[in-house]
Length: 276
View 1 (tube, rainbow, N blue to C red):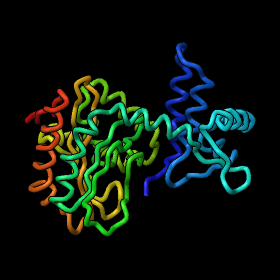
View 2: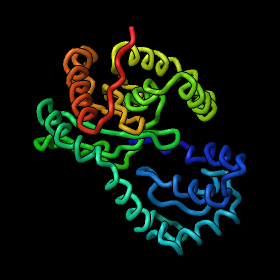
View 3: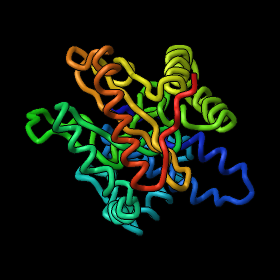
View 4: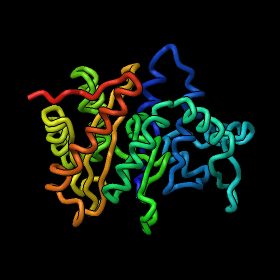
């Protein structure tokens, strides 16, 4: 399951509030929306206050405003809320604007059918990656582990590592510093593996996550840069006993890079070249 790290944008909100060109109330409202996830679809006032660090009276006012605008709606349980239909409307507009999805989908679906595994496309959202397309083999009898809108942590997912590898040194170092602060003591566990994977991605054009995001799940990702220099990541993987490290390197990485290059060619983007 995706972890709803006690993140939901608090660091980003604090940083934004320190800038004179932002509206702190809006930042706080967005941080409330970020609290909701697959693991926590319904939250109460106390939950939101704890996850964001925003005082309870302010949380009450923010929730009331978001409820009035359709961004939140009451849950079945008393004094709890879920995301409202207005969020879905915005999401549809966002997804419809991503022409890369229309280009990528048939290529991703073809690979999913050929290798019998799910293939994902993701972009960065704050300190995580969010899936904007998910293709899985039609013959699969397994319930999808991830779907459009699912989130993955940047340091220990192959998607996040591929994204980081495509950044220039300055932006990557800044983002890694933010991730280090966000993760706190946990960084000693996830940081070294992330650094190795980024180095490998820059040398080989792909990177792996071997049971580091989901236990017993291995995956490979490659970065993809759009025409406006927006960075995305393609991913493929599955059960570790099937998707061994050797197979990911020998079979799946070259195939994933090939479809990334096809997509990049069609949208006017590029795939970063490996640097020995």
